[in-house]
Image (cartoon, rainbow, N blue to C red; front, side, top):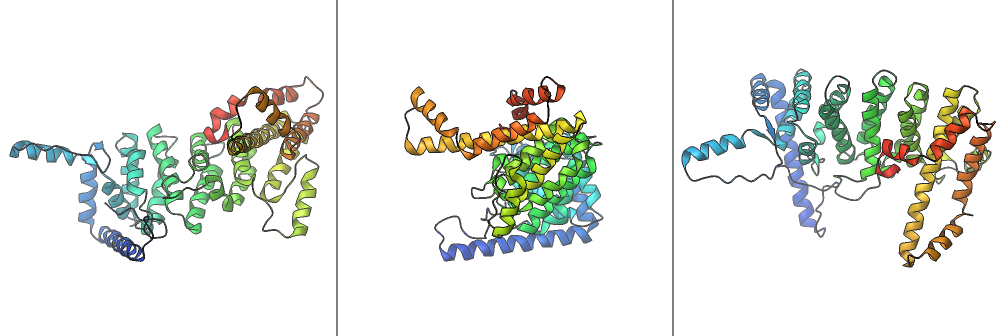
Amino acid sequence: PLSRGSRNGGSSGNGDGNDKDANKTTIDTETLMIESLSRGFAHRADLTSALLKAIKGTHHSTGPHSQYNYPHSSQALIAAQQQQQQHHSPADIWLLACCATAPHNLPKVKTLFRTKANNGFFTPQLLRDALIGNGMALRSLFHPSLMELADGLLRSSNVEGSSTVELGVTLYQLLFHEFWEPMQRQEVVGSLVTHVGSGVGVKVKEVDAAMRVFSNIIDNGGIGSGKKEDGAAALRPFAPFLISLLEHLHHMTTAQVRRLFLLLFAVCGEWNDEKDDDDMAAAASAASSSFGRTGGGACDDVYIVIKKHLSLSSFAKKKIGIIGTVAYAVSRSSKLLEQQSSTDNEKNMVDTEETRLGTASTALPSPEVHDVMEMIDAAYSQCQPSGTTSSGLLISNLSSRHTISSSMGSAFS
């Protein structure tokens, strides 16, 4: 198997220079091996045919560390070896990715990948075993090989089984975390945004799967990255790509609209104006103050969209503004609960009824709570008179947090 190199090509141990040099040499050697295999499959049709035939004939999947207890008799040993050969290993994924670098081999590999995924022989765990820790050595396979395979799996979500979708979601998520250079991550995010833009209103499952990748990145943080990483912070540089999805709101399902707003608030909500000059920051703050919030930056476009939809007379469009308002309230409330929990742990507070009441009363005047209350009030004023369908929808959504939790996952509940 490929070595589990760290992101920077260094050792995960004590940082000794000799260890770093040795690890870098190992990664360089593995990279050359991968590139040589890719060139071989591109020019040797017989090798490609042999590989595809061998993988087609393998009918099980297992991890790279499975142990086999071989008996002593020669016949039993041969039978055990044949049984071992009937299991997929991470090497199968690497070899197929090498083979797919050649344009004339790519369609065959994509078809085989979908078939194996649909039959349950290629599993998310197999992809994790193959990719986690190997991003540096496999970097020559990122584009077009692995990206094309992920694209093919997600685009087949409307005709294949759920196993294919899960494999595509997992592959995209692993590509984002293991291939961490900005241009590589931008390509992953751009591809996912393309899935949403091209499938919205037509391919519901594909759109759901693409947006679920973003949710998983935020939920799981630095999965497979070799170090702890905040998922929302990792996506923040690519917030403009996510904001562009607001153009497709009118064609999304209710669950997709809710997920998009929660994604945007998770990614953009902590974006401050450090990179803007003072005048731009003041202008952004003034533009948003009328909607009961402070700050600026990337989230301003989101607030403008919510406010615009709330002001429209059409119930279908006003509904989008209501969903966005509730998403904001839930997002900010979750952050407040996290901050409160962190503060309580630091102060080693005694868990009594009195301290809970005291903490709650202290939190009420906070700017965050004030922003949430003003935003809800502004939304409710747009849903008047009381008792209309719009006001009822707003109150119903505010009182039904489980609706949002079930559609988003742990990070958004």
